[in-house]
Length: 178
Image (cartoon, rainbow, N blue to C red; front, side, top):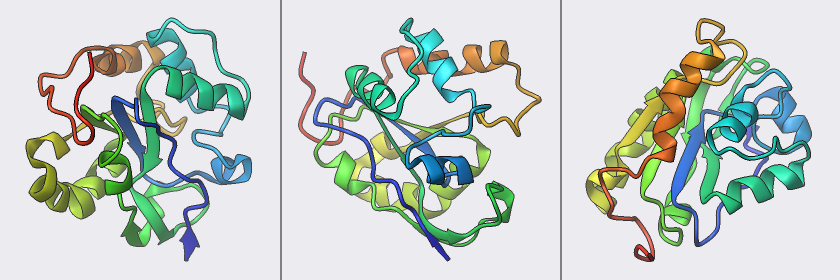
């Protein structure tokens, strides 16, 4: 059983929450999200947000927070072989309420089908009981290098939704500030 080694990244001004499934081996080594050099997450966000590519962990932290983006993963602990989402067994979910109760999250996105499946299985129902329809997540295609069927152009088209104002403008936590 491996415990999730990376704390969530968010602050009171976070507007969207992006959830992965569980950190890859490279991310666990780096102690930060999307650490594999072939993962397209950072390149994708820098293009969509028209911002310089963040190289270091500190630059990535600052980049996300300055754009109102919170990140974490669906799973708190599990059995996993290497970085393979398909091998995840005996998963226990993270408690997302710690983010949702204090940040201004307006929309939850999940990075990939496995993260979406795990979110629906472990978190969506209980969170919808507390937060209503706000807890319904949008599943986006994975930025993982294992998702080679999705070109960068296709990913950009699908992920562009994170730059749009969500239909649901109710937030989970503190209330929306203009």
